[in-house]
Image (cartoon, rainbow, N blue to C red):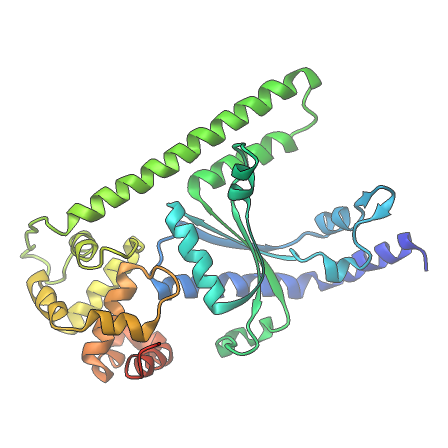
Amino acid sequence: MGVEQQRAEAVQRYAAMQPELRVAADQFVALVTALLDDAGINYVSVTGRAKSVASFAGKAERVVDGEPVYSDPLTQITDQLGVRVVTYLQEDVTAVAGLLAEQFSVLDDRDMGQETAREGRFGYASRHLLVAVDPVKGVPAAYETLRGRSASVQVRTILQHAWAEFEHDVRYKGTIPEEHVPDLDRRFTLAAGLLELADREFSAIRDRLQATMGHQRLVAHADDPRISASDLATFLAGQFQDSGWSRTDHYEWISGLLLELGITSLEELGGLLSSIDTPGINARMAYRYPAGAVRRLDDALLAVFGSRYLALHGNAHREAALRARLEKLRGTPSG
């Protein structure tokens, strides 16, 4: 069978696989989202897709020096399933990558921003990981069909995402006149440098706020028994200064759990947290990624209330996961 015919058959087989690949892509998105939510890591969005047939065919037909790049496209083209995680800050990119490394087998990990920087340039910046279900750790039963599949995961800040999307969109529109290429490249480079500076400033702003927020005096709202999400975010920033921010809706969600426990003021919550062994909890949980503030509070409440926390109405959807974490909290600290 000739090379051209092999490629054509690979494309035909890939086209036939599209329905199951789309389902698998949606499952990977759901799984990554669930992992991020469980870890309390702040993110903007999680999206995914199955590589289109046209894109697969174009990649399968690539030739270098007269030789095909892929002798077995169905096996060698590894980005058939793609997931993209967009965060606010660079530190969150690192946290997401650490979480993925803990939960999956990482087959490849490239920091494109660092690679560009090592060349003394500004440009495309994104963390690219190729992940697969770990054969030992496994996945929740709902995602068992993902065993044997891999997914390419891009993790980038919202500014890096804006640059990459705009650059791709401009270059996709058509051939750029030769006389305009140098100026266009220069402008894209300038924009990439400015956005890297902005990313650093956003991180500095977060660090400054986190260092001071815990010292603010907060006023209770008499018309609502819950601790407000904004007050809780401020309080936890001071309580867990080594943790990143969590999503706004996560602060609102755990405020509801606090209300179920009868905790309606930051004074009560502060007194409770001052009585627990935070270093002991950290040792038992052995976080390999910077767990978000809400996750840190979640584990603290689980350690204090145990089975009562498991039984809360707001935890009904994750009782099994919490039970596994409770067993870990009651075990021997990692050495």
